[in-house]
Amino acid sequence: MELYIIRHGQSTNNASMMLDLRDREADPPLTELGQQQAEAVARYVAEHVNIDTWVEQAPHNRKVIHGFGITQLFCSPMLRTLQTCRPIATALNLQPKVWVDIHEHGGLFLDYQDERGLVGFPGLTRADMGAQFPDYDLPPQIGETGWWNSEHGYEDIAACQARAIRVAAALRLQSNSSQRIALVSHGTFADCLIKALLNLLPGEELRFFHYNTAITRVDFHADGKTIVRYTNRVDHLTPELMS
Image (cartoon, rainbow, N blue to C red; front, side, top):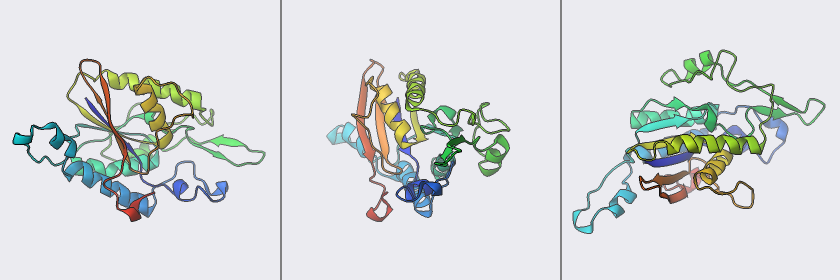
């Protein structure tokens, strides 16, 4: 099984991260740059010459193969990943499946930095998500009051790491298959997930960093081996699209 972890495109929070925190949104959309990045990564995974497949072929019998051959496409329920996933799904002719457990660390919240403190938000309701993304496969966890338990407010990093372990275990169940799975997810969660997949201890001493729409590939072999092919690949981005 091949796993492709794709970070979302630039969000409005990413663009304003050095500015006043009061400009932050609980569930930010993509910027115009983020949308361009999403379209670029969609073209890349669908059409680009797959150099990894080329290297694997015998030199005397090499054939040019375009695209990654992705067979399953998942995204988190956050708006920026839903939007990033749309051009990818179109390019690959796949129905995206929303996987709640691959959302970003923290959940949906705002830190008002006053007496209100950290406040949680419920996120898109099932009706709203269905209206904006009608072709997406929505799980039962997304209800008519949203998908995030806003009473919890903020998810700490330990809970995010535990969630990553659950996702890693679910992915390993398909390790003997020939599936090529793409997850459109988030920077901190991707870091936690890679550590979980590699049985590394969680912590900030080691971090797997991802630019917006960067791709990481991890292969699972039937003999139990896990191979990291690459991390943070951004071949699809020109310099002006980097963020």
